[in-house]
Amino acid sequence: MNQDNALNLLLNTLHNEREPSLWVADEHAAAAQHIPVNPVVEAISNRVDVATDLTKRGWHCRFSDLDFRHIEDSSLTTLYFRLAKEKPLVNHVINQASRVLKTGGRLIMSGEKQQGIKNYAKKAGISLAGKAEIKKQGRDYLATITRGPQPAIPLDDSDYHQLRTTQHHGGIDIVSKPGQFGWNKLDSGSVLLAEQFEQLPIERPDTVLDLGCGYGFLSLAAHQQWPDATITATDNNAAALISCQQNFIQQAINGEVIAANCASSITEKQALILCNPPFHQGFSVENNLTEQFVSTAKRLCKPSGCALFVVNAFIPLERIAKNHFRHQKLLLNNGHFKLFKLYD
Ligand SMILES: C[S@@+](CC[C@H](N)C(=O)[O-])C[C@H]1O[C@@H](n2cnc3c(N)ncnc32)[C@H](O)[C@@H]1O
Image (tube, rainbow, N blue to C red; front, side, top):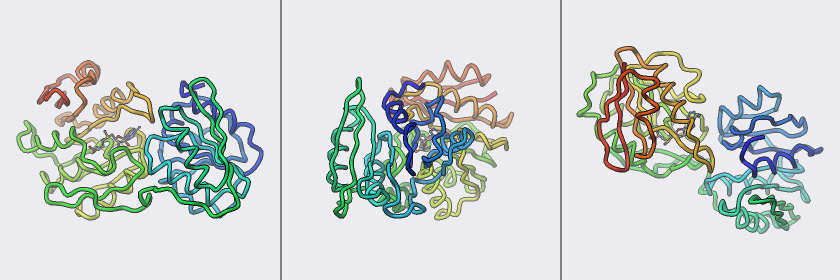
C-alpha cells in the first residue's frame, strides 16, 4: 500500500463497488503500488503516466483532461475521487458528478482536513442537491455525498475546459487553462531562466527540449530567442499539454508537444534542454522527481549540448547532478532560485 492514506481509504471502498462507477485518478494514484482491478469501475486520469500504468494493470482507464463527455447523464452509481490540490479541478469534478450520477448515486471523496475535505463535502452536498456524510479515520476523511432529485447548483470551476489568454509576456499572449498547477501565473524561476537566455555561455541550439513544459512558457521564450530551433515540449499533465499545444499553434513554433512520463517516449538527442523540474506530487513533496528529471536530461543531451535547470534554492541539485553530468556550473543564485548549466 502507498503512504497516501486518504487514497488508501478511497481505494478500500472502491474495491467493494458492484455497480457501474467511475474513479477519477489524478496524480495521487502514481504513488499507489497495488490497486486490484475492479471491472465495474472505469478510471479517468489527467496524467499520462497514471493512465498508462492503470491500463497495464488491467484497468479500463482513459487519459484526458478530465473530459467526462463520453459518460451519459444520470448513468453512474458512484464516482470516486481523492481530493486534488487545485480548486477549479475539484469543482469541475463535483459539477460533473452531479450530471453523471443517478438520483441516489454517490460521490465519494477522500482527503485530509487541511486539504479542505470538510468544506468541499459541504459544498458538494449543496451542489448535488443531496446530503453529505463525512467519516474520520485517523487524519483522513471519507465524504459520501448523495445525488438528490433536484437540479444541481454548479460550483465555480473557472470554466474548466476553456483555453484563454492568461498572460501577456515578451510581447505575446500566452494561453492556458485550469487543471495544472500555476496555470494562470508566470513561474518566477522560469522567468529568471528565460531572462538569462541572451547572456548564456552556450552556442545557438538547433534543437531544444522543454522538459516538464506546463503551458509552454520556456518553449515560447526559447522560440523568441532562437526562432530557427526545433522545439520539443513534453509533460504528463493533459491540461498542460492542451495549453502548450495551443501556444505552439499561436506562435507558429516549429516543433512538437508530446505527452510522456518524464519524456520516456522521446529518444532524439537535443542541443539544449530547459527544465524547471516539479517537486510536488499531489499534496506531497516528491524528492525522486528531481533525480528523474536530471537523469532524463542526461539521457537526451547531445554530447556537445547542455541542460539548463532552475530549481528552488533548497533543492540539492548540485548533489543530484553530480551523479549524472561530468560538469555543472552555477550560473545564478538569488536566494530563492538557483540556475545551473549541466554538461559533459
Ligand atoms: C515547475 S512546473 C514547470 C512548468 C513550466 N516548464 C514552466 O516553466 O512554467 C513542472 C512541470 O512538470 C510537470 N510534471 C510533473 N511530473 C511530471 C512527469 N512525471 N512527467 C512529465 N512532466 C511532469 C508538471 O505537470 C509541470 O508542468
